[in-house]
Amino acid sequence: MKVGDSMTEKIKQLRKKAMALPLQPGVYLMKNKDKEIIYVGKAKALKNRVSSYFASQTNMQTKVRKMVSHVDDFDYIITDSEFEALVLECSLIKQHMPKYNILLKDDKGYHYIKITDSPYPRIQSAMQKVDDGSTYIGPYTSAFIVKEAVDAAQKIFKLPQCNKTFPRDIGKSRPCLNFHINQCSAPCTGKISREEYVKTVQDALAFLMKKGSDEAISEMKKEMLEASENLEFEKAAALRDRIAAVKRITDKQKVVSDSKTEQDVFALSQTQDKTCLMVLRFDAGKLCDGEHFFLNDVEDLSKTRSEAVLSYYLERDRIPSKILVDGEVEDEELICEWLSEKKGRKVTIIHPQIGENAKLVDMCRANAAEKLAQSIGRKGKDVEALEELVKLLGIEKADYIESYDISHTAGSDNVAGMIVFKDGVPYKKAYKRFSIKGFVGQDDYGSMAEVLERRFNHYFEEKEAGEGFGKLPDLILLDGGDGQVNAVKPVLERMGINVPLFGMVKDSSHRTRAIQSGGKEIAINSNRRAFTLVSNIQEEVHRFSVSYHRKKHKKSSISTTLTRIDTIGERKAGLLLKNFKTLTSIKNATVEELMSIKGITRQNAEKIVEYFQEENI
Image 1: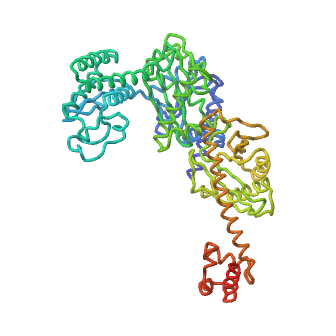
Image 2 (image 1 turned 60 degrees about the vertical axis):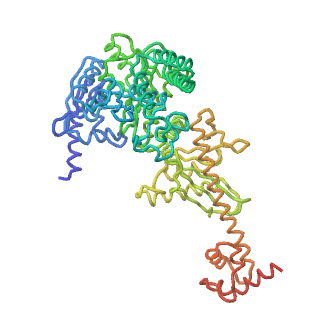
């Protein structure tokens, strides 16, 4: 028996077993062939939920399909209510830590602020305390707090953040950017003595060990006044600048929200293959902690938020009264009931759309996008722009965007340009050019329809390769409005291509104004990141198509000039252009040079030389 047949038989057996389950709430436990629990879920009706795993896999999510492929058996526990099922599900997930459940472990451990024992001490963050002579401040349970403290100390006291070793590297290179923006005292240049540097590090250490910045500022003010009275004006000025830096940085960190209650914020950022969950924790309006987690195979955002919230608070005792989220949460009422019971007070989940809370969610989402971008070597603003565009257009994703524009001169030399934006940036490897072949004259709608039909004919020929024309885009943007969209839509429908299609509309100043589809305009200028992305796409596709048109038009003009010469037709004009590139080169060529081209006879060459000599008379 083949492996595929064996798998199909197993699925049939599991489905038969699932169809015998009761229509009651409960918990189910999926097990692999080693009897390990790989997934725990809850259900309002066990029979309906469990049997769905073993039905058709056509529309099944990738993560679920992977899990089902490893299921060898399942168990179940009936409960009196769906809420009881949720509580039991949480308990079993914490107990078994199944592979296919979202597990946001509280594994931060302890963190320390470390001051190295060296001639020029450095302030660093450390995961553990080691007996190496260094000074350690801590422990802290939050890496976020340690990073904030180290960053603040380095900026306030202008300590080096580079990898140079002192005194070895003093005088061996120019100071870096941090010196020029007044964030480093540049010991690499010898501008500060070792004694001064060590004293600065001691001041930074004292600042870190203070309970608050007010005490540090108070002491620095006393020191500044003493220096001023002793006519040590340079020292006093340095202390003044340091006090200003402390105030500037601590003011930024002090209050982010006006809310006086504890609250956490959850937000997701996605690319095609990866998702980042960011959690920001606030206490009395101050950002006190932040964590991020990377998730794979996320397709159902509502379910993912639900599992993420449950998993997060399974591992943590501190539960706030308010939880802000960036979208719908599956089983929200049940989760609030479970959290309220665990906390002993009412807990609410909020989806803010406007106001201060919406800004906090936006900040959380921006942080998630930045973390995600760093992990895949992209920029956070590119990830955010794509997310904003996807939300605005109501589509699933826009990681691979194709855009088209038509260019011609009064109906002559008709061409089209196709550009690709991959992950929010130009992907020039996939750019394509088209010469319009179906007709002569000016017809932008007909030209656009022809180009898209030719493009997707290539798709059917090359789709097994999965690259270039063989790859389906997530979104198609046409330079133009409803006319272009209406011309292309029937082509895509006839060819069975189901890709979101929109037009990009310009204002009277030829700047992007809106996105259009089905006679309706979607204003995008209030969505800054999406607006910038679409504007960049429209400008790039226009540039690309126009550059191709100009090149073809120039070649066409030269070819027309050459075909005026006796004995020179289109074919020989093409040979001349291919070899000499420009009309000037052809004009300056000798009879022998012209004859060196295969296909150009002596008679042709003499006629060409004669033509251009007469032209110059």
